Amino acid sequence: MTARWNPPVEFSPREDKLCKRLKTTGRLFVFLRKVRHQLFDDATQEKLESIHASKPRGTEPKPAAMMVMVVLLQSYTRCSDDEAVRRAEMDGAWRMVLGVPDSDEPLFSKATLVEARKSLVANHLDEFILRRTIDFARESKLFDPAKLARLRIAIDSAPLEGLGRVEDTLNLLGSALWVLVSTMAVTLMVPVEQIVNEANLQLLSATSIKRGMDLDWSAPNAVDRGLEQMFREIQRVQAWIETNSQEWHFRDGLVLRAHEQLFRIVLQDVEIKEDGSPKIRQGVTPDRQISIEDEEMRHGRKTKSERIDGYKRYSSCSLDIGLKMAACVLPANVGEAHGADKMKPTLEQLGQVCEAHVDRAFLPSKLVEQVAQTGRVVCRPYMASAAAGRHGKHRFEIDLETKTVICPAGEKAAIRGQKAQFSLATCQACPQRQQCQKEDSKQGRSVSLHPKEALLQTLKQRQATAEGRAELRERTVVEHGLAHLCNRQGPRARYIGVKKNDYDVRRHAAVDNLFWAERQFSVAV
Image 1: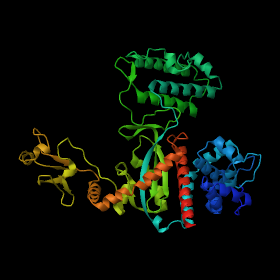
Image 2: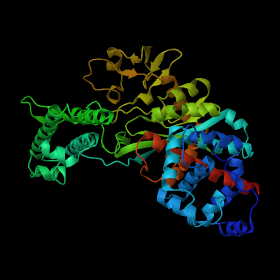
Image 3: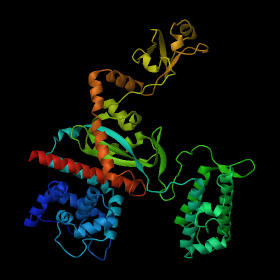
Image 4: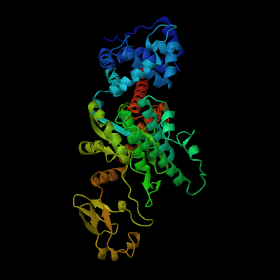
C-alpha cells in the first residue's frame, strides 16, 4: 500500500519566518501550507491513491497527494516539468508546502512527475481535483452550501492555440508519409534510410519536402506540380509495401494507424481531375486534420475575423459563489454548445442548474434547453439581419399563443409550421412595402420562426427592461474569471490531445479556486 502524505500541521520557526517573507509575493504558498491537511484529508488521499493501483513497482511510489500538490504548484508558478523538479529540490517555498526538510537529494524525478500526470489523466482525477477545491471551500464554510443546490452559472469560451505545427497540404502529406515510413522502420527494426533508399523516395531523402521538390514556387502551377511529385512518392511507398509485405506485419497497430492517417489526409485535401491528375481540394473539408503532431487539432473561429488553430477552452463559473464549477477543452471546430454539454454531467453532480448566463452560441446546447424548461436562461437574443433600409424580423410582433405574426403596418398572418406568410395582395397594398420587401417580389413577406422561438421571444422581452439588461451584465463574472484562467494557462496548449489539455485547464481552474479560497480566508481573518 502506498504511504500516505502526512506532513506536519504545526509551523516550525523557520516556516514562520518564511511565511512572513512570502506575505505579499507568495500568499498562495502560505495558504497551501496552512490548509494542506484539510485539502488532502484521508478520504481525498484514498481516492487519489487509485493512480497507483495494480501497478507493480520496484520502489515505493511517491504519495499521490504530494504529487497532486506538485502539479498545483506547477500551475501556480507556471513552470516546466524540469523546473518543477528543480524547485522541489531547491526552493524553500516549494519544500515548505510539500512538507519535506532541506536535502541535497531530489524529491522526485521528472519521470515520476510525468507518470503521475499520466495516471491522473487516465483515471479522470483531474476533474476530481477541481471538484475537491469546491468541496474544500464548502467544508471550510466559505460559502452557503444552499447555493450549490440551485446553481446560477455563467459559461464562456476562449481560444487555445494547439501545440502541434499547422502545415499546408504538401507539408502535411509529406509529414504523414514520413510518419508511415519511420513507423514501418521501427516495426522492422531497420534504419529509416534503408526503406528510403530501397523505395527510391526522393522527397523524404531531402532536408525538407519542398526543397526536395525543387520548384519555382512563384509559378502559377507550382502547387499542382508539387502535388504530382508527392503522389508519385506515395505510390513508391505503396509499391515497396506490396513488394515487402511478406517480411513484416502490415496489420501492426501503429503502422495501420499511420497508413490510415496518410490516406485520410489525401481524401480531405486532394481531389482528382478528369485527366487523372491530383489537385488541391477547393474549400475546407469538415473536421479537417491540420497537424500531424497533434491529430485532434482543428481549424475553428471565435469570430469571423479570428481563426483558431487548435482548441477552445470552456469554463463554468458560479455567479453566487465565484468558484469555477467545471472546465474542459474541445477541438476548435466544435460548436460552443458541445462545450456546455461536456460540462453538463459535472454541473449536475454539484447541484441543479436553475439559471444559465450564456452567449448566443451556447443556446442550442442540451444544458441550456434543460435549464430553459425548469429555470431561467439569460442571454442576448438573436437579431435577424435585414437588407439596409428594410424591416428586420425584430420589427414583427410574434405571438406564439395565438400563432400569429403582426407586421409593422399592423397586418396579421397565421403561423403555419415554422413560418408565417403574408399574402401578396396585402403586401402590394401596404404603404410600407418599400421598407419591407422588393417591389417585384412574387409573393408576400414571410417570417421564419426559430426552433427555440419561444425562448428567443422571452429573451427579447427581458432585454427591453432595465432589470433584464442588468441581468446580462452579471455575466462579466465568468468573463473576468476566464481571463484570469487564460492568463495563467497562456495562449498556447501545453500538451497534445483533448484529454491532456482537459487536465491542464482543470488544474489551472483548481488553482484559481484556491486563490478565491485564500481571499475568503483573508477577509474572515
